[in-house]
Length: 81
Image (cartoon, rainbow, N blue to C red):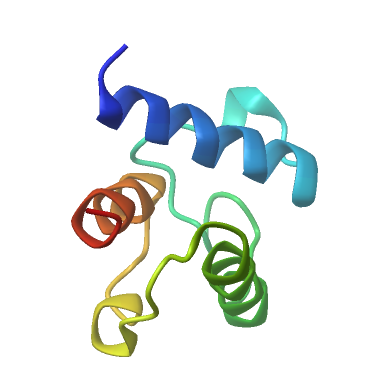
């Protein structure tokens, strides 16, 4: 599995465990707010946790553009180099 595939898997696992989202609802194109029922506070808490746990930088300008599971994966790939 390539890095992008591993990141999708990690993001999916986090959504299932921390937000109790059923796996069948999670896909790269799933909208975090409309499809998965998250709100902006959930998203900010999630990114703060990733910052603490794995050192993911917080880039506010980019965070405002994140809407889908794939956007989260892309953000991880860009910012965890």
